Image (cartoon, rainbow, N blue to C red; front, side, top):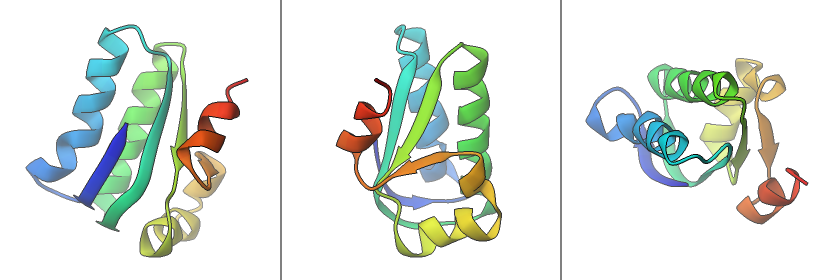
Length: 99
């Protein structure tokens, strides 16, 4: 799933959780969030990623992050959530890591 724009408080930030819920309902269990198009993330956006990871894990799946750079990647590093999420340079590598 490709996410673009700002992942923050508000309806625009809801896109991640909604997409994850829809994909899980369709039976997908290996998900990649391509974050290359995200220009800004705040604590609410990070919280939405955590909620998404919890949903995927509860469904018996795995979630990888791809393409996060700059302020977005740094936000995960300073909160030490880069130890919780698996990050990859691009979506292709994230998909390949599922095996």
